[in-house]
Length: 283
Image (cartoon, rainbow, N blue to C red; front, side, top):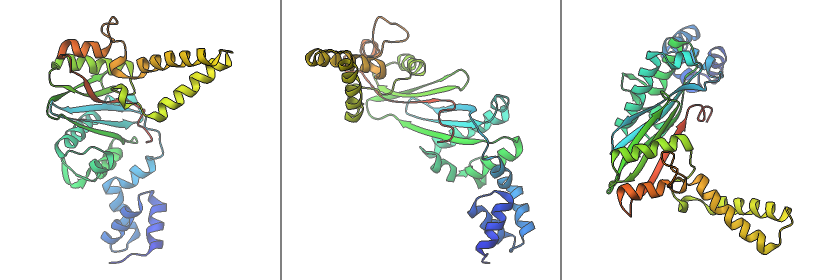
């Protein structure tokens, strides 16, 4: 049957559920408003919507996979109490396993899938049901999927029981232990780029402009200021580029030197993804 827009609007106002969920519930209920509310409550959608405004910045970063393909998610809740609850942790692990199995590399794709634990409902609906059961807002904030190509392999690292998670892809000549050491470094040092050539011209232009203005404001002659800028740009690379950072496990060498020492002259880190719990909340 067809339902009116005003009925959908009324149901949305009364429950806080999404427009499409309200429309489906009204159709299923034959237009009966009270029955439609029951349907939404049964599915957990009304309860989920009422909690959706509440900040969810705690939770868990969870990783699944091997050295060929791996997935990582950030699942947020409101309190550390729930984050440490086995039901919440099992749910996070189920979601990341499903992301890995399905090759879902973003939130929208994963949410739209039938939930592996209950195929009659989507992952998004499963989250809503979990909100209703646990009583806190739960948000799937971020999803990442990484695959190894020819000549490369993956490693991962989870820090502090799920506060930080890292996926990293590097040359196949690197041992699992070496790649994990790099993943641990990434967790600790938070680089922005894997290699120098990833830094965009816009970023470089901004850094040069700032460095030049700082030098000129100190009254330096232009030719001296340019040399200062050059030195500051090298320092910038050392701070934000993984391969040029001082290696956390051995400060006498850079990450790049460590990687080449273990994997050979051509060895490199191709890519990484780092999730810190709470940074994805609200994205």
